[in-house]
Length: 394
Image 1 (tube, rainbow, N blue to C red):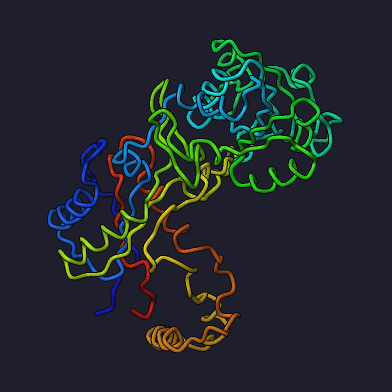
Image 2: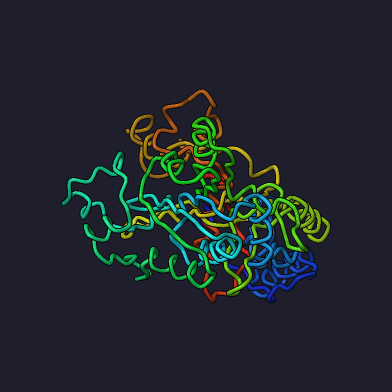
């Protein structure tokens, strides 16, 4: 009988994870209980994806504002610094800024415009077009920006982030000056000690700053790479990927995630006899078509995955093959011909993959998982993906 379903994705409910919980057993138990309840079976090459949040929670990988402030004081003992390219976010950046402001007396903050690195807008490109401002070259003071564009809240959150960041610094007794410029080197006209807060362009930013003679230049990934005063830490990503937990605490991106995915894979093999793939996922990599916000504010989609999720999909473009190789066939003859073609396809046959986006498997599956679990109240921090590696010929 011909199979009539392909990839199936299920959000798996799990208990609320606390520090010290046995995450490996909880994940395996949750998936197997769901399989029993919903009458589906676990198969080889199924994918179990777990959100980075429950890994970090099980680890207790948190840091307080005071611990962040202590880390900042260590690298900027002068009490002042340039903060460059912060994300416009209460969740991602506001609590970090509180720690920076608690440690410093003065901050010069350089914001990119018209939007931040992940698409949050300070001002729309249409508004820019109505002025003679060139965002590629022009440096704006905060006063000039407000004269041109007024009080311009974020189109989705309705928050004015310049005002919010002023308020945070004021409450911590730190003076804040804001400039708007898209060349990271502009900050060197104001400060010698620099902390860049960009995520995906961070290597380039530091390279440009150091080449331009910055005395001390760091990125968020350099902060809390070790424990400070008992804090959590991440040796690879530091403060990148941090999320607000409370007004005084952030949850860090999880560390040692590979240990978890390997252990879960082993647990499932022992209990089912099936070799599943396992990954940890954070933000998906996709863009909102209305507000133009790119979801990926984490440093990577997946900090850890089992070896079967490496690489890119080896797929053919069915429409292309049907229209070019077998244009004279239809019905069962077409289905059988394409199935045979899939079985015999050769890696050097580039044309047959035309139109298939060359993205990494774990980025694709992480995005699918993030869309499935969401960040709200679904209560499904585990996602089970079945049939992803199947083809039309299976």
